[in-house]
Image (cartoon, rainbow, N blue to C red; front, side):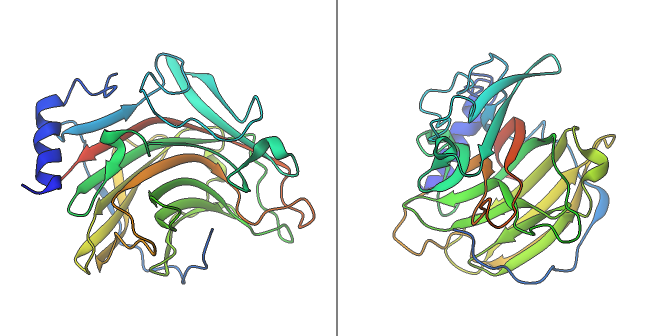
Length: 283
């Protein structure tokens, strides 16, 4: 039985109980042509849930054993904040301060690298949903540094480049697959939504040949449904440069190549909440 089939069976059997499910940036290519349709992506209510990270209990690991919280040492590199009726997680990075350096770079991130339900392997088809709030975010003005901030990643184990990530790019949010040289803008201007929750969905068919896909959708404040923004089909999504048996997701704040000397914003803070990994192999 394939790993993905076993994972699907596990998800179907345990959906509703897994919350512990209720429990180097490379240059990217030019923006692709957007394929969007209003309300094209519906609810995930009937899709088996592999893992939910919702911070309702107010803990940095959301009550999930082995969830990586942050490797940065500053006391406020990662912390829990009130959000609606429960909580969310905040990640903060201040340039020039070693307390906000993790694995040799300015970043603070949480990750599922040691959580079985948070990993992906070749053959899996998974959906990643999450909410993002840009907290007290300094917007881009002409002449400012154009370096972006990574806020979510699908990462290959073993120090490989990410398969994909979403990042702020001036005053927009872009999806990128650096190894495949893919890039598309999925939020053209986030400024009207600063201090509000923006929601994202990334569907991936994980393949080690050219039969995979990425599908990226957004749900902005005031919207009730996800809107498909971009699709990449017939691409190799599982492409580690070094041997890797699995991948995992990361969220938080990674500020590659940024320094005070370059004029980058000294401090950034981002909130994340309602992170879901779903099995879409039966869909």
